[in-house]
Image (cartoon, rainbow, N blue to C red; front, top):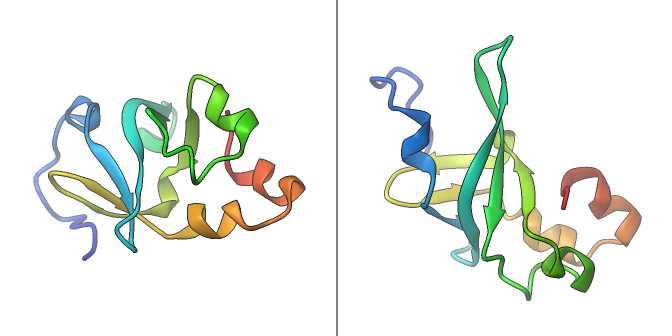
Length: 103
């Protein structure tokens, strides 16, 4: 699966409410909002809520949500598929995970 960059552009608001899964099929969360770079006119992150508490530490899980970088997105359809990096970050030291996942 890949992102079809030549496809007809869709409204970015159509992403809100879609479920996000890792490439291994593990539920990560649901898109609540998007982080945008208005100068570049690009989506830079996905703000997730209803997080899978097994993937995030207690501090992140108790927060309102998490933002994952849009560069992790592999495919967008009825659901969004991201790299399995979230699963790998879960096993990493807390210092490493704070760089990529913002609560």
